[in-house]
Amino acid sequence: MRRRFGQSLRLGVAADGLALLRVSGWPRAGAEVLAQLPLEAGAPDALATGLRALLGEARPRGWPLTVVLADELVRLWQVPPPQGATRFGDLQAAAALRHQHLFGTPPLDWRISADWDAARPFLAAAAPEALLALLETLAREQRFHLVEVAPQFVAAMNAWRRARRPGAWFGLVHGGVLSLAAYEGAALAAVRTAVIPPGADRDWLEAHVAREALRVGVGRPERLQLCGAAPAGWASSAGRLKFACTLLEDDSADWPLHVRLARTGIAS
Image (tube, rainbow, N blue to C red):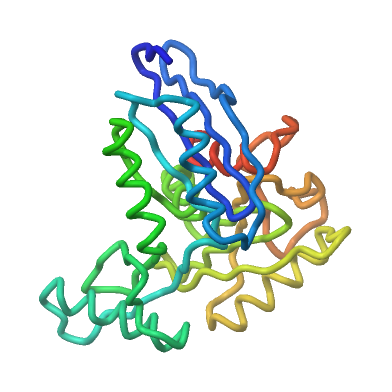
């Protein structure tokens, strides 16, 4: 596979499937689907076998490759920094303790990354150490450049960071799940996820956002900005006064689920 200037690869990894894209940033932005591979979710070694097969067929030697991990494969949580924290080790310890409190075990088999901040609560993410080690091994064996491995929600947040308006919450709709980043002023207060019931309309969305604001302990947002496969009926319409809702992406393209996963983060 010959690489042209400005091109890179993007790999979506979920428990039940993989998708590999070739992304062009110049002269025209776009993404081409190179391969898709369904997996048996929960089967032993399914991810490892699938990744080896897909990348072995694609032969990405010399290519920069970004991996987007489905959120069900990772853990996301908010970490309040310890009072008086001055060292990076203090923040790492706080993230590990918060992980143990929320998930019941220390993060021995997980690798933590975060927007480390000693002054305000920050978002932390943990990915399985075994999966990250496998990706690093494949990068060495097949001689591609592993640029980044990011959870889908983090990739979406980073892509649309500059578009977030003051007073707005950010959300991602993917695979029938709504993930919300709730903000208090400019500070991220919490990340919340919920399964979207069949036929959920704008009234459901408004009630859900109101409940989440109460649970998090922050005010209801002035605006909700959504990316991903959000229903068109959720967008703002005349007479809606509780909050505005902006759909950041045109969802007219009928992308398969795992291709959507791999595309996350290139739409901004």
